[in-house]
Image 1 (cartoon, rainbow, N blue to C red):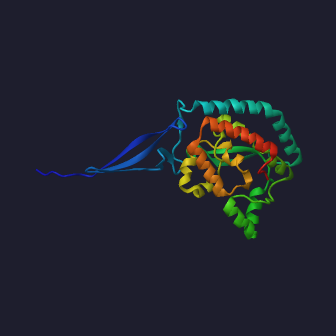
Image 2: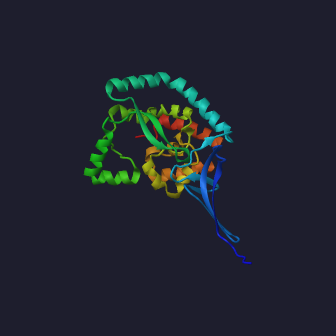
Image 3: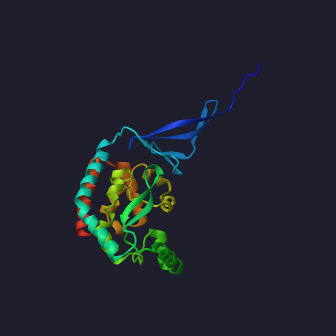
Length: 268
């Protein structure tokens, strides 16, 4: 009679729970057990700081009973009040944009949200209609602008921004439509800066912290320099918020944001 140990490959499903957002998702994992040694690997997901997030946006969270109801309730109440209060201003901005600039009033851009899921971030259009074409031409012909773009993902003298766009950005009025993103559940009032897919690689291992929360209309980056901060500083602030977020902290950031917008500090 022969006895011995066998290596057994197990493929099963696992339910992942994020205590920060009150959501669950599913993923497959491979587990190889050899005697007393066990090695587990999640396919399409990584565990960082006790949380699990998809590296390829393969995890789709399904919100169940929230463990952070105060934040979501605040998002809904605050955004509803903001939409009601700013609706006349938004209608006026949309009308002026349509008559003065022509083209679409709103700009929809894909951003990376909670658990890596992409969504359409809504803003008033602040750039010329052929902005993407102009950017490609500028970066191809101007090495200084290309170097600035590669470092900061923005330009200090951006030729794509229209005259009215400069005003909307300086006053942050271009971001008012994002309250609809909050009501939809894609964003939060306070959170990390919403990034595009091309920026994910620049976050390196910090991307898991970013994906652990919904991106926000405002955040630490907004009240600590805004456009005066470097890209690495913005990443660091996103990580800090994700690790230390709290309802009281969110309220503090909201009040600081009001001060920043009224004074124009850090705007360009």
